[in-house]
Image (cartoon, rainbow, N blue to C red; front, side, top):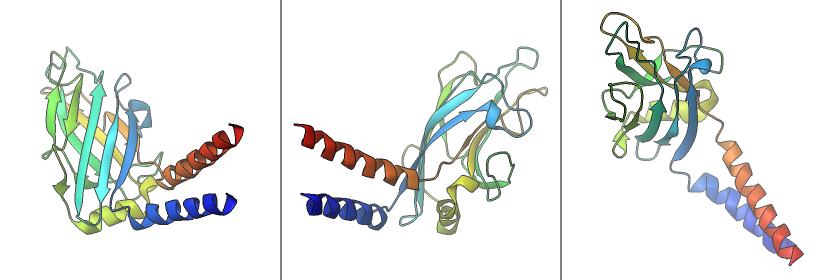
Length: 188
């Protein structure tokens, strides 16, 4: 039984690197992660997937409570980007991948900003070297949304931000799940 479990773990770990044509990151975004001043009430979450084999990226990000200041009126999304390299937690970095012109915006609030979803509507092509940079050191990159108003206002340097996590932790979670299954079978 022990050799069977070890074989399963080895196959699982081997498959996770051999078959991982794409890597999906779960991103949690808020204004507190912005360096400097971010939107104090805004937050978001979702996924972004990078596929180095097909050079494609896809995403689905839902955001809420982005400040829509009545003084400045019409605060709108003005940017949606992957920033880095050099964008580890607590550091700002330049835009590496511009997603805002490619995102389908679905506002669900009364105005254009407070709540909505950004989705790629499927995988979209990008230069493979950009994807390779992100996957080489994901924690050096972050995703963020920018807002801007007609007469000022908003957060043009970044309203909410989400750091990309280390994908290796996902493989460790899978191994932990296998161990729990094994333990559960023993107790029966």
